[in-house]
Length: 239
Image (cartoon, rainbow, N blue to C red):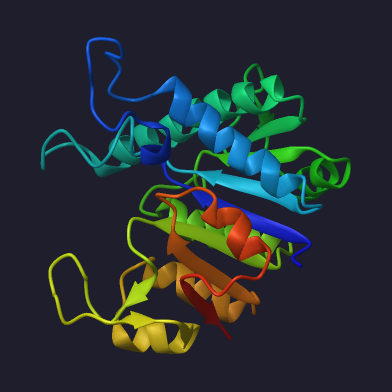
């Protein structure tokens, strides 16, 4: 059993599968936000300390145009992850569990400024920790942010959800001959250029000797608990 897990939660997990007249928001679906919150609380209730690195793709991704300043575009993305963290915090609190939002930027009216010791203290007192604002810097994705926070917070694993079943030899949505890789090292993923996470994330995990990344299909959020209980779902990436 893991003691401390960093869960990378994509913004798309919170978004409606399709926009209807009853749900005009392109960014959030109340039922999907509640479902994500329940999966996080269920993980916490296994006795695991949980930090959740939020993505922001349901609100903002990329740039308006190629001419847009990429630094400003990335800053907008960081703000999107903070909005998502607040939405998930609300849902977790309604389930009766403690949750603290930390941001990589100063906005203390909304959330606490991230510091590793404060985040660890919050997890040790029983709160779920929602880590938002990315790394606080442009040009880094939330995948790299998850690896960074896992290293800082001495996590046992990063749980990374995808829309496929794990790491493949190629993109299975484009290449029908692609095969699932169940077990692979950080070094191999870098050398083979496997893109399920950023190379910088794998390199950071390698350098900081993070025990493992578990990569699996998160269309079914129950897979989070299955992986935490040790079921051989998806791919294990390790030293």
